Length: 358
Length: 77
Image (cartoon, rainbow over all chains, first blue to last red):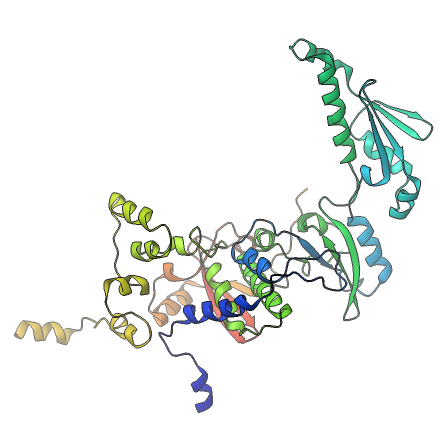
């Protein structure tokens, strides 16, 4: 019992500062280089860039990666993992066909590439079907699929002052772009799916992140899917899951660099970032900007803005926090200095009676 | 077609429940704090919707961290 209490944190300890230093110091030792790690489809930023990404709460990480686990009953079957990987991987027309644009004739020619198609498991019928979805006039000529730009729309354009050739070229260009980026199969944003084996289970890791669509696949276990896009987890599974995701991501970054930071520091960071119900950035637009005290905010960044704004809107500073009290030259409410603030003598009957007697 | 996602069984989400009024009062008294001093969770949060919690409810979270099991509380705002 004695040993245990020795390791407990006393009330009033400045845990935030300790946590900040404990994460910050190893951060200075982190390599700026990003590593490739074996078996992963794409190399994901690690080290300092990734850490900054996490605490800045970017809407989308530089390299979003999704980890898909299958439902328990399918988890050990390689065929099913392969099937799922094939189903989710997105393939565009430009991946399996050669596309040629002919401005003079106003057509776009799509030439199916048999070798590429075979490798990716795409047939010419699938290609045709996805092009037809756009409701365009299609002509087949041997190996070629010819798509013409809409002439009707062209006539309407002529009423304007645009030269004819220019608008036609533009349209061909537009059509070309549209056709090359037409999805043949798969889920939007997901590519380069790779099957890995982990603890006897087959898992799929892929580039891109789109939980909402991936879990529609009947083999995918929606309760064990994971992405490194913390914002996406927050939106779909809530703030508590996002908090755990932050802990996991930060820990992974530090582990990969061979740095050991007590997990309590990381947990504290994640808790603070998620305490307002949404993930707050660490910095002036997030956490620090939400401080109640004017002086504390002014001490951090954008001093003049805060100090000039305060009297205009009539802000009050109750001098509760640490920073304000350092500025004011009072006892800082940390450690034993905190006792003064915590102890507000309760108004008991005795006291009021004593006052009356005096 | 809106498929419901089973949010509560997600592997990163710990067990959560809505607290009863008396429990909340006891909790606030124990720590000597007001309700608005608790960490917050938005009303639009998927978990809050799944639990059918309302504004002002307190959610008790049975967290299991590497450091041990403990309770965490969040007030719905």
